[in-house]
Image (cartoon, rainbow, N blue to C red; front, side):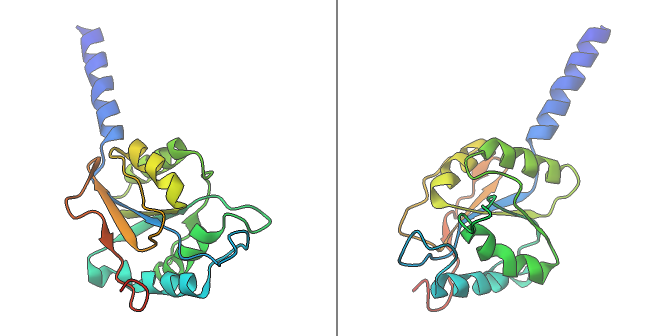
Length: 176
């Protein structure tokens, strides 16, 4: 009897850890310079980063409490996701979590789960488009981010893409 109760409690706690009520938004970094080897964002990417401050505002129905961007390198490479969400994080008084490597979707899943243990606020993840598929799969519902787009928002809720996903960030002058 005691063993059955313990096993049932373990099963319930595992379910609770894996299920959370936070909305998770996945976006690609802003536009890059014509020379792919040049670190940072292009002027259009910088415009997008500024636009995201309005896109993900509370007045638009978002409650962003946690922002993640892939770990960047000391030489400036892989910094586009961070540069894309940094203005938003600053406007919200948040720190961007860059603790997860580009190729480690399990790290991201664990970080989202840890955040969800103490908050029901929304989560925003900004990454290279190639990595978003693995991240979405580990969060519950896989998709392939199209390579020529920079404006799409994918929303995962309760391990599923929402019916309206993806939708455009609608940044004026960029997404028309």
